[in-house]
Amino acid sequence: MVALPPSNNSNPVQSSNKNHVDLTSPEALNEFFNGRDDVVGIDEVQIVGTSIFIDRCVNFTKKTNEAYNQLNKLASSSSFSLGAVNSPEVLIISDPDCVAKLKAAHQHNISITSKVSDCSTSTIQHVPRRIVGAARFNSDPYVQQMNRFPVTLQERKHYFAMNRIGKDDVLCKYEAIRYDRAFCSYRSLASLCPNGHIDNFLLLCFYRYLFNKCHPSKSKKHFFFSYVGESILNNNNPDTRNPTIVRNAFEGACSAYLLWRSNFLYFPIGLEKHWFWFVVCLRDKAFVFLDSAYGENSMYHKAIRNEMVNNFTSLWHEFVTPMMNRRIAFESFDVLYPAVPTQDNCDDGGVFTFKFMEIFTPGTQMANLFSSADILNLRIRYANEMFFSPLNSCDKSFVTDFFLHEDNAN
Image (tube, rainbow, N blue to C red; front, side, top):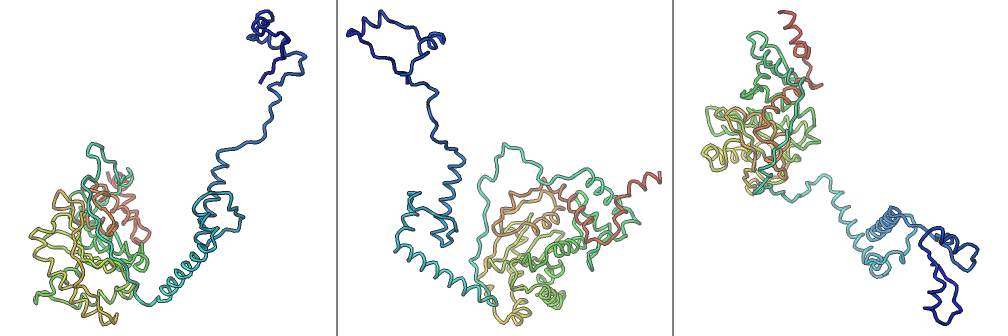
């Protein structure tokens, strides 16, 4: 603010006309203010304080956290001023009656939690998780889908070498993968070639690969060999019935991790040159069929669904129920067919079963995670992951140096 000296002229209009001063130029301003002590200059403005937005946010967040911790009896050691924040939380904390009620409720929750945690030997009851259904529109049909499973040029080169070896009449008999007692030849590994039908021995090695990758005690999953699931399906056939296979499989699985403490039991079924999964969800109380080709209302599943469920229930009660000393009410389990990606030929069912094993949970929308367009890249990735796994004890130089030997031979 600029304070001009008062005028002695009683007529301000006349005075302003006679003593008019032009203050629009810098030179006139300097001449006018030079030597005048009664003018308050701009340079005399004092800064009394600063406020930074980041500091205000940090301070507000700190006060909010302290108020939340006070409500949940997790009070921090820092000081807290009730007058700093005007919020309902502060009003609750400042009221002695409300604090007493909150403390009583907190102690009640602690007592309930301690009772549950003390019962470590008993089975904790979980609410069954529902199977998530597909939305009407899973994605924008006008947006091009990204490559969800990219592969490198080196992986393609190794994949091509494996297929070349697997199709050779002599080299195909050599051992390609060995995980402890599970092994397969290059002929079985080459079943991952484009449009190849997955070999039974390769499927067995993949189960062992997942077993070693994540033990059932951590994954809460048990993967059974295909002949176990087929033995359950054919349990009513007197010519092919062999309950000893199922009993040995159940006892062997329990030696690794108790079956009734697991969440999922996976049984692959190979029927009419097609692979699908029969999954027993113990925690979620459901029998789930994962099939990329046949649906719930197909004649394929109508012929085997009830038989598979009933045979599993009877064999479980025969071999497992005596070990666990209690009976699971399988009669209350639901039979479900979740929405899964579908195959567009008759040979990709095995690759779909591989992916189902990895990603299936009741809350997983598998149709959004992969599709038939990803199968070729999945074949390449599975071949490389299984062959070059540190768990594979076979010589890997046979594949890595394949093209080098071929060039030397030429």
